[in-house]
Image (cartoon, rainbow, N blue to C red; front, side, top):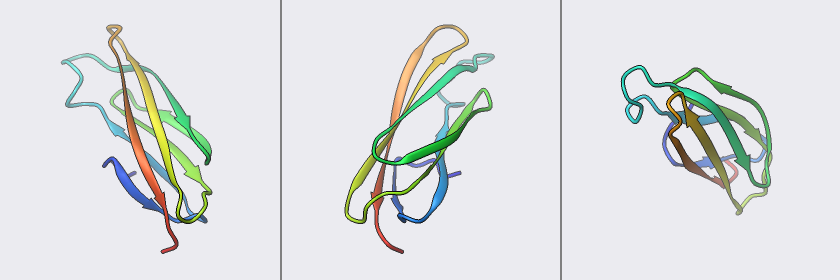
Length: 91
């Protein structure tokens, strides 16, 4: 899984992208719920380990940029979101 915020994504690739929330979470706090808003790509197999969230995506059109936004709620009720940009290019 890649954990930066901007990536080149090939249109035929099926890859997982996500976030490690562990440095943001307080001691003992976990990610209780995680949802993904994925624009223009096919998404599947979202996961949440309690500190790391991820989603698999595939597809895209060369030259287009896509966003994957992860919305979370923690075990103590805090809410946040982070976005990954995928730039679709042939590799």
